[in-house]
Length: 399
Ligand SMILES: Cc1ncc(COP(=O)(O)O)c(C=O)c1O
Image (cartoon, rainbow, N blue to C red; front, side, top):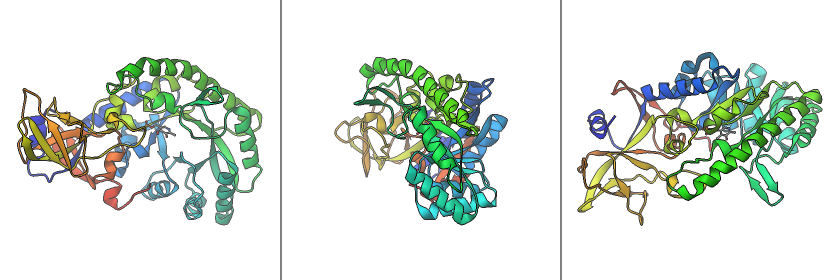
């Protein structure tokens, strides 16, 4: 849709507004299906990259048999989603909050499949305690660090699990299985340095060749680490049912690994702008937000009300939303995307939004947009077909 299309779509709507193009979302789901087709893996949907119950439901429905379960970001979120009708939930980030673990264990005792992540003794103890109190067994997943560590001082990848190598993973799994109330049923190794690293990034072009080289070197190492860990668990008698890996940015390479049972994808569905910058993953923008032009402080500049929806992660210009429509708008470098206002330079040619008209942006990260809006306008065939709440619109915030 071009800018005039957005203007027509938003006629009479309150600004700011967030918009999801359901047709583009469907096509992105199909792209993920195509990427994993024939691999024998299923796709687990990363809920953090959506944060909207209605959209999560649509993604799983369209994914059909090829999609299975959600990867949740907190224990409370997993309980919330279970209560909303989802099941097969993997909580990918460990936490030892007693009340949340109690709630989770209570649901597991009722028949839910919700599996917490563990990588250290305190996680095991907290999970085992909650399981025993609920009179059940918690199935847990152990997380393997799959970062590349060429020297002791250099850790290339996200700092997540301390479990480096198959032996460390196996030892923790055996400790878990020796505890009353716990059973290890699989492992996860998330290669953030492959799946989450844009390697065609226009904001830092000079680094792209280095990023590609890192990925080339890292991919076989990640594969070896996951295979060795899977083998170590199996030969120690662990019933390994889940081997999770990957993300939107690594679907092609992660699905090639024989030991992997499922790949995770989230950001590709809404395709926030950071996912434009992967050479190996192509998705189409499906989520947008519109700000009101509220002023024109000088010739060639318009100012939008609000807009400082800066994304998490390593700080940089790529963490700001991109002005998307009309094309050619650029930030004023001393202001960027501001708390109360976002001035934009107009291009020499093309449409010039007037006061009251919308400018369309894309967030850098897919799920974080939902923390800014209560409602998404859901568009089909170029028209607003539905309005549905985000987690925030349901009064829920999990981090
Ligand atoms: C454990 C884990 N798996 C997979 C992903 C990939 O998610 P996405 O497809 O949204 O990049 C993430 C993202 O941070 C993650 O933390």
